[in-house]
Amino acid sequence: MEPSIRDIIIAEAQRLRSGDGSVTLEHSSLSEQGRSHYIFVVTLADDSKMVARVARTQGSENLERRAINTLEHIKASNTDCQVPRIHWHNLDHPREIPPVILQDLIQGRSLNIWNSAIPKELQHAFLDSLAQFLLDLWYIEAPESASASSTVRTYSNWLENEIDKGIRRCITGSGKWGNVSDYLVMRSMIPQIAHHLDDFQTIGIAHGDMNAHNFIVNERLELMGYVNTIYLRYPAYLRYSVVDWDWTFEAPLPAVIQYPWFIADVPGWHNDGVELGETFEHNRDYLVKMLKVKEEATRKIDTVSTLLAQASERQRFQSAISYRDIHREYVVSDLVFLEAKSQDIRPQLEAFLMKHPELKESSTVKQIVCANQIDSP
Image 1 (cartoon, rainbow, N blue to C red):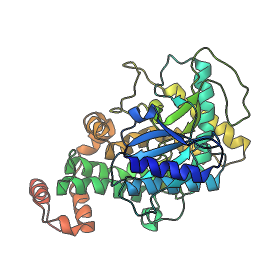
Image 2 (tube, rainbow, N blue to C red):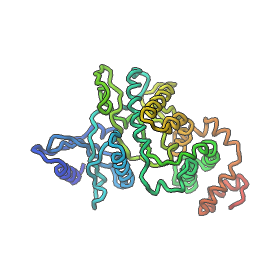
Image 3 (spheres, helix red, strand yellow):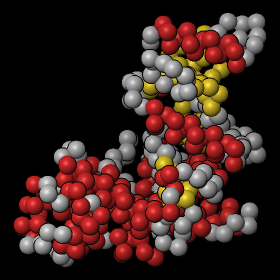
Image 4 (cartoon, rainbow, N blue to C red):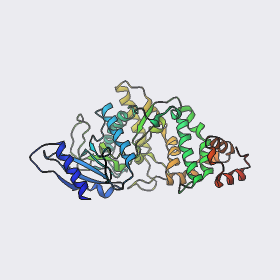
């Protein structure tokens, strides 16, 4: 860590809290796990603690700002939602150093592994609190932004935009995997996947990376101050907070409401500590059940539980757009995709080129046009 970064963090920490003690920094063990940030624990002058997240490289400003704006909006909308509070960042300052953020220190450790070795009562305790977190998050409407424009308000339009990005990457050569034909097949599947969900036009907030490493747990069954405290010999797997919001995004609710990776059973996604053949359908069913209970208790419409109960096929399809390993598995093994692959993709290419006429002269498009005997638009 460069001395200038250390000096900046210490100066801001001194400004944030007064006291008789000295301000110190120490590496967090999470620094070794994170691929995008160095993590430091900051002890302030009043002996309280914060976390300093320092981006490993320059060029991540957009991701950092999106995460900050999202967290601030979540806290402003629902103070009970268990996300870190942002105290300071340097994104608005002239600088030659990577982005630095000071935020709440979430005591505990990463969940890391979710499997059947966890006692059932602890699985249920964790899923109970996870249901509350998801309910808190998914009932917050996203702030008005360019990403929530009227052109992508339906799930079908949103999917088409995302798939077209994949097609464009393949045509221009900016992507390292995938091919145009497979994405065109997926484009043809949008009506089957999404049209019945297009009435859900509220724009919600997705965490974007709900893997087990981003859930912070402690060793007691504590849930926002109102669950009994029970000390356990087995490490407790109860969600205490959710961190790492770098990949958050705004989208129609069907795109947002999906299972956390560690219980999703998406072919091509690999979770740590899971035995071959181990599946988590029972966890998904229990999570949906608890969401229904909490919606009824708070007199909410059952939008979240309904969309999550139907999420498995939608999540496999949506994840195959942007995750390499999931995409590769999807295009060789998903029965719905394989059936769609036998259909004519020419209308999809023609529709894509009508939207993106600047690409019709590319060599990749010409090869596909020739192979499929398509009249050039």
